[in-house]
Length: 100
Image 1: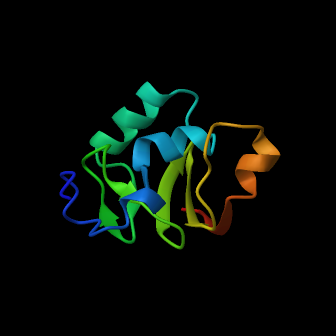
Image 2: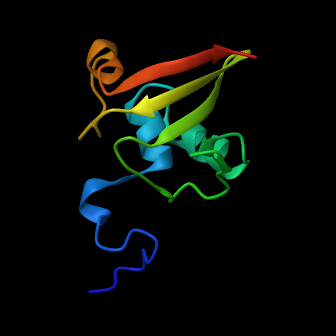
């Protein structure tokens, strides 16, 4: 069955849209801001610039995200099912690098 995600090749049930993930993990205050951040190319997924909010993110992917005046590089440990408390969201990723 082709659901329009040829790049996911059968793994679509274990992935989440990048804009939704940024919102769920509390890097953005709402989904509209997360979508704009993704579409303007400010986010990188595994080193490649993201220009579409619907790109899929999976566990073990590396995201580079601007947060305020700094940039964070995080590895996704697990995918959240919903937006939850900050401590619960923080348990879904590990920070690899902060700064710039």
